[in-house]
Length: 255
Image (cartoon, rainbow, N blue to C red; front, side):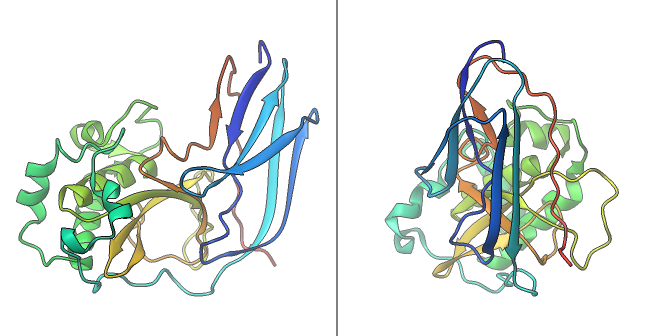
């Protein structure tokens, strides 16, 4: 940093998901005071004043996860708008990266013939998975779901944004989720590990996990943050001059 800069960091798992936090450590080098608060969506956020000069942040945790895949929501029913809880209606509206108003026509043309509910959400995930190429370095902090649709490529964040956008255009409440996703019961990915992004949709009387990037129910998800889109759950936000040098993410199955 060229000057002292306030930053917020989201790396700590939430306490209300399927996982259970067993142990954790947080270290900064050099040491700096850190306070933690819950944001508007209940995400645990660390806030610190980064001093001038280099700063290293490290977070480690052991987390217990169910030895079973995500619950299957493909048969869950879709609620009519007047039955969706009022506090969740904003998850049907456009947001910074999920411009559902712009893609409403395409959403209904492409998916309006499918059965309402989890089957329709799965059809959205199938389409995004099959038509958007996963490729690192193809998007930037300004890339919206509309851009992803036009470019037909992106990272997991972008695929999640597009699927969320389609779901909202179809009056299905959908929110963005990011966290850790270890390679449990799947072939190891040779690419360097990164944070993972997927989505949750509200069907029946609960939220269900859907993953347009992998498009399979997975074991071992560790959820860090939820929000309207990636703007609400940025891993690192700085409020001043700072240069991001490097990041290493690991999520491995412990012995």
